Length: 412
Image (cartoon, rainbow, N blue to C red; front, side, top):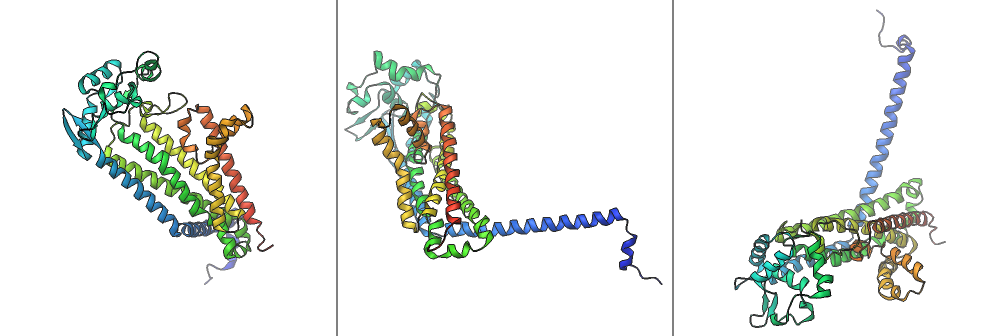
């Protein structure tokens, strides 16, 4: 009986089939190698991410920041007061009463609506007798935007009157010509101040402190010599450290943003998000989404861009400095340079008109001012130019950090 399955039987397989079998085995091996490499890179990335996330100073800073915005919102809600039909309310009840009252006047802001609010509620002012504000959100908006309220002490309604003549045309009239949507947006105006003016900047400081050791700590601990001794360590290993830092920044930033959105939605609800952003203080001039919701989302996106740019800058500095403390100091200085330039040197025009303007645009492309581009009245093209500038600077910083760390020579 003849044996089956012997090696000689392979000769009976047609040549094309044998080639296809070899080709198939080759592709399987190639795929296995690729998957193995990806698995190794995934493990390295997770290890680098864990290394960054394990630094207690980061979580102390994040916790304090979360506690700050939470405490501030609690105090805003606690101190909130409103007077309706002679009855005063405070806290959460006052917010709900004010929202309900404002909903009755929501819609396109017109002169008739302003007059109706004034006749029904009068002007908003501070009552010395009750030691509280007399009025509601509607009367407060009309009083602050269309009267001489800020030119008075704010505690004597007899001194408050509507703007007249040129003052009316410059301050109040534009609000009545653009078909602006009015609604209760007090909470979202406070969100803008807490998140855009304070929260993001404080979070950036936490990032500077937390990301400074990424490269410089390797120098201090002499682990860079070991990590850079392998081919993988000198190439993909460095990029994975960079990717882990960028990922950490994005994750923490988005978590912080989501948390603030959540607590403000919990206290103030969604009412007012469809109101016109201009009514909440956004400049008439320049580019910006029409609604408050669109404006706040665009501010959040600019903040994320600023956070990623800041990460690139900190990594570049970290690769240049031999210890983490020096990295923190240099990074903070670079972070604050745009503030010093625009507040001190810009108005001097020391570089001439054109060059000073160019430097101004560059400075507003940096992390400190990028999330606040809306406050300068920039056009859409200018904001786009700032984002391109930020992207370019960020990429250059990452490449610089990569090459500087890769070419590290230990004690030499």
